[in-house]
Image 1 (cartoon, each protein chain N blue to C red):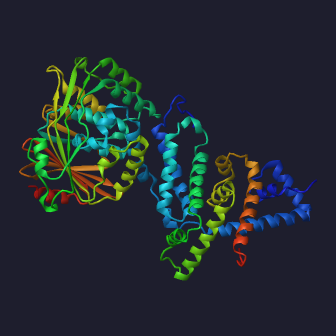
Image 2 (image 1 turned 45 degrees about the vertical axis):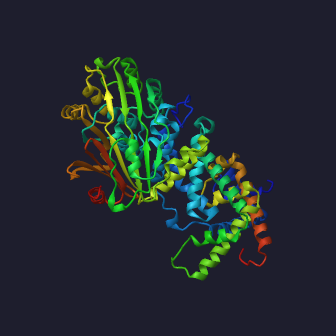
Image 3 (image 1 turned 120 degrees about the vertical axis):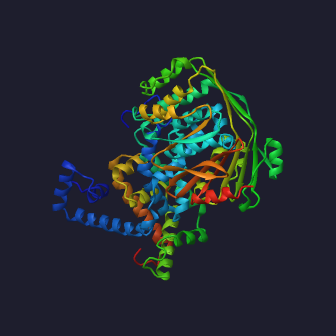
Length: 181
Length: 405
């Protein structure tokens, strides 16, 4: 962020481009995890960047990545919750991955089923916990997680433990017969 | 020492501890079976959850994204959003694109490289003409901003400059949708041709007349150039105070295939709605391959003071757009500015060739995009500028043009 023109109300185009190129692919990948559907994920990522663009850069100076990850996952989790447990959507979502690659139709089906369950659990726990889990599993570092959730890095360990515990409990409650979780 | 909090055990497991903290935890674990058991519990819980969540990981090819390409779509939205109001909005409003169909050709290309000032200047250069022939000049837009790392200021200055200095004297209003070429010809006042091999156009729009003017204030131009770090460009002294007035006659746009509905978002009530719809259109546009535009436009007329040296101004503009002074000078010396439409195209993503069609010479410009080629064929026949644009193989343009009736 060094050298940013502080008086600017609008984005410096070169800088915005840099931010876009830096984060776009990762944001889409995170949203694919949440939504299971690439075109929806892209649409939502575009929405997040569009919102970022409409934000005067100054307001989120220094933590653009955090703002983006937070906004994108909020949008994704909102959508996940809104779509509730509609099966059609989940099936469509499950069908979009790994098509035709070394996996039998049965494996695909089981995987889709499992994705559905994982997403159902994610949409049932506290949004901030779902955010934390999805971002961590997408490979964000503690520093990035702290930026995205506006918390101290030292709190992340405890938060992760709590979120995972909550996730496991709900998962088992919803699917008590699942052996290997 | 008291036992370790599970949050810290987690930090330890994730490799997030360092220095004294790390040493302390390591030392404690070595001697505390209780904490070691806790650590194993945390480790197991972490592994279980990670394994379940990993189910959601997208397939590798699902995340192969070219953000630069996606970004190109965004820049076109930025353009709509950040241009000064009201003048440039009107000129760049989608409904008016056909009016400036020719200038817009350069603009469309410029959008791809996201250098807005090129567009602004391109229009300016294009406007100063009475067109009888077309000439393409390749520019290198990346040099435009080379002197300034943070280019938001140049953008603002440019936009402000345009907003302050250009006055719209004739507003074209909304385009009129007509049902057939005969009606279009009656409205436009000149014969309208169609691409017979494609059947009847799916949509025909007639755009009203447009006029705008600007008085050159050399001090302001010089200040602008200084501020954007291009004080090397010399603005001819003789240009000071010159009034440049542009008049664009009625133009006719015929669309074939599944072209985006241009009218739709013009009629939207709110700006945000219009933007949202425009955004969706842009997204759709990328995949929109069978849409073909045929634009017919009589030459715009440009009035300038008789003693104004258009060539010198054009030279400055082309330098600004990325030509070296020597290139700009030698190009400008070969061009008859009174009769030539100059279309700047970026040299890295576009190519052009001279072709013969319709009994005249034309220019075929091909843009290479990541999702395929886009072509624009330009020629002038009976005083009417024709522009035929579509996606795909540029040789299609010639066969389509051959079927013009």
